[in-house]
Length: 360
Length: 66
Image (cartoon, rainbow over all chains, first blue to last red; front, side, top):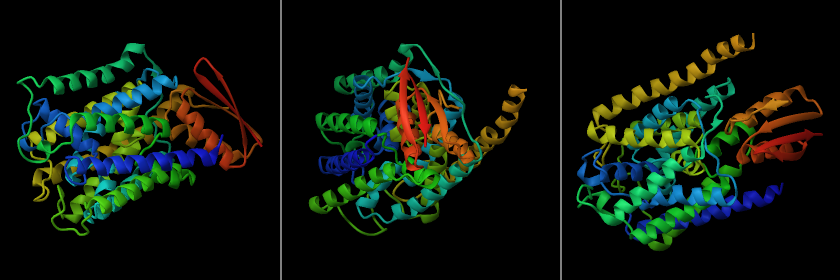
């Protein structure tokens, strides 16, 4: 296979995605939030009324675009296949706590890059936690962690989440009275629907073709000395940084960064939880959306876990705000790290005994 | 012979990496998804192996040789 070629491809894809992401903020999305899978799932859940935090309610077309873009790309390349059955409930729980971590930090790994590119130094602290979390996950991977295999499912199964996304998009266009739309706060800031859906579609297609993943880069570097995915990460950072500098979205510092807080310890611990959970899941929230589009029902369940996690975070005051983390949020992050570690232990060591018994 | 069907990355690559510790000249890896097929190929090539891929019924048999 052309090795140079696919490294070049992911760099180009990363550059395009970086420009689009920074550009979306310019077109109306919140600052340093051209894309944020966690925030956008949270806003969407709020738009549907599953949580009632008034500032963060809006159905984000970017999410719809990513899933449908990935779906189309996979379908065109005959890579779409309905699969599932690899520990769905475990994935749901991992997704749930990944979201708790994201909303402690205020961003998924994708937004962490965009925050870095906007000069938000709190994201550097987040990145440190993120890398530690990835190492925690790698420890279990190296010792045999696995959620067991998936199986082929009926074709309809793989269509479920993409169809749901289309329905949600139709709801956004129709704007029935039972939906919630923020009148102020981040939820009220958004690019035009046409821009947002197109941006999502492009990112979905590119991410599907290149297998882009924000945790995969660091993970593969450590496990296999493989740098391909990391180049995607770096390319997004560079492109978003340059776009921000050109469009005037760059502001270096820690204090008064847009939709961010300065509590270093909890920024780091939040992202630690995200990195840890995502390595055990096999991919960051963006990658989970893309794999849902490819027909992977386990990833679809993970996305539901993320969404339910977001609803819990805002119904029970676990999510941070610009003022900082909440006491309940801190407890939730600690519980999350413990639960994710237990999931790691159970699926690394307990499972090993069972396989031996199966062999006997 | 590594059977990594139904597993998503990085598991198939990890299994291949583990198998390759025995330093034999020939391995077969079976996967059922395009992504692990690419990743295992990339990894094997980085270890100085040559890879031939046979596809049938949505499964990929990777023949990895020195």
